[in-house]
Image (cartoon, rainbow, N blue to C red; front, side, top):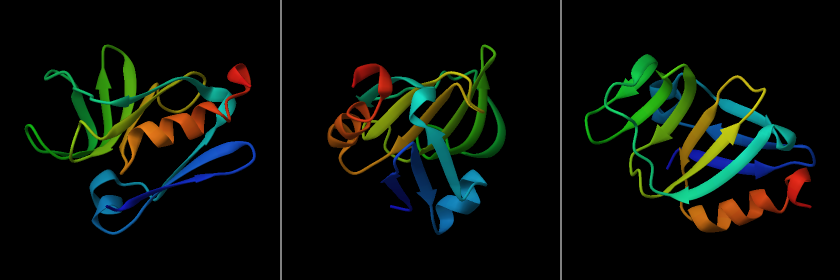
Length: 119
């Protein structure tokens, strides 16, 4: 898949490998848990007018890299938009991070267990 998630004591690490690195122009994201304000699992739809800043975008398909929509900065890395985890962030480089994972609902629960505001 080209993406893996590691849970550290104070941050979530999303690592990209293979072609996923080239498409998204990033090897990893380190996101402190206290920057995560909301987590959802399942479907995501990028608005058609979102501006691709750097990365790859195939209509109705693969998205990777940095996008801008209504002043919000997104980092996307997915092929199947129905198998993603969406992180709403505050005080981080991106406002939203959307990443395809094999088990979105399980990853969401694992993230929620680590968020200081929900512990």
